[in-house]
Length: 239
Image (cartoon, rainbow, N blue to C red):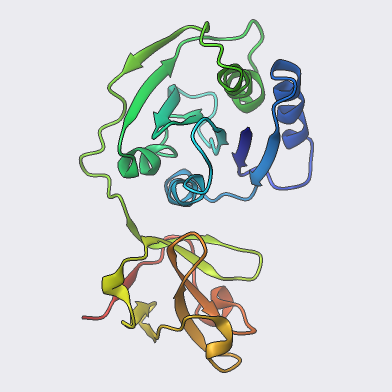
């Protein structure tokens, strides 16, 4: 299975072009559009790290959130806990590596005969992801140390993504020590609730979401608008 994780948006030609390359090079392999509205590389990485845990070993994640396309950043493949991630060396894959029990970085030195300066997702990353999916490792690569993760937190106490409903996902994995504590978001105290219907309409709360992340929501409302939130806003549990 190949899973697309991009910031392309659901409309336009880009997803279709990448999917065509995948299906031509890895016929018979399922291609899933997992996320097409990812934020900037660093927060997107924490969303990716949470999502990938829902999938079995052997899956390939084609990760294209690449504002520096055409620049001097490397093309990386990360093998983490049996899953494969293909994408740019811009921090997008670092959270996955920071949370992984075992990992291996490969620098992709292969280049196609024709490589667009602005669409490495189609021309470089997609062909490599397809080959990995069919277990073809004949393309030019080197095992490398990878980026320095010493200062890279396994969890990120910021908002990393807004879903369609305006709910704010954070980069914090839920831990038992958080139970029932008050979360401070934008100088607002947000209490815990197990589910939406546990609070009155219009009330902000935080809960343990289906990805095991701390998420901020408003029952029958939008947390992003009601609390004036933005990607990168910090969150902190009260003592």
